[in-house]
Each structure stands twice: as structure tokens, then as C-alpha cells.
Amino acid sequence: MVVGLHAQNVTGRVSPLAVCTNCETSTRRTLTMEWIRRAFRVPASESHVGFVLVLCLFIMSAMSLALVWQAEIIASQREAIRWLEQLKLGG
Picture 1 (tube, rainbow, N blue to C red):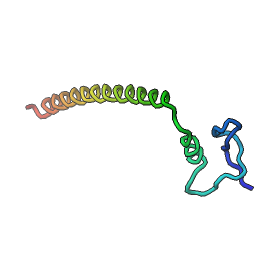
Picture 2: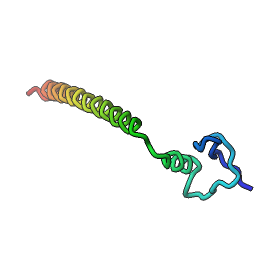
Picture 3: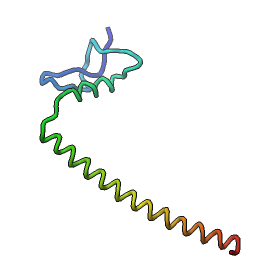
Picture 4: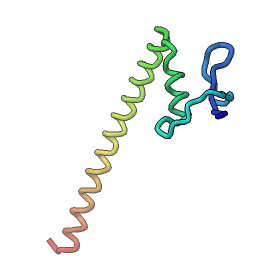
């Protein structure tokens, strides 16, 4: 008998801490991946889709701001490197 770390509870949701006696023990599929597969099988409501889209929009805008910030840092480092090269080479 094999005991896993996930199962469905009374409400039909997957609980990662429940004990399952018929879990798959293949080396290719971990218990975490099995739990993720079962958790994402549940259909999403329209309000959840809207929330996820807003969250993605917020995260993408934060990443674009971080990219611009990093570009400014790289540009200032490039200027510092050129100044050090001129100082070292006497140019």
C-alpha cells in the first residue's frame, strides 16, 4: 500500500496534506505535480479570470518599470567604465 500526500476532501477540492492510498508513485510524476494537475482541473469563474488578468497587467507593468530602471543603471555603469578606461589608459 502506497501513501501519498494529497487527496480530495469532502468539498471536492484537492488538499495537499490529506492522505491518499491509491496515489501514483511513478518517478516521472511527483506528488506536487499531481496535486497541481488536479487543482487546475477545476474551471475558473469569470471573476477569477478578471482578477488574474488584472494581476498579470500589474506584474507586467512592474517588470517593464524594472527593465527601464535596469537600463538606466547599465548606462551609468557603461559611463563609469569608459571613465575608468580613460583614466587608466591616459586617453
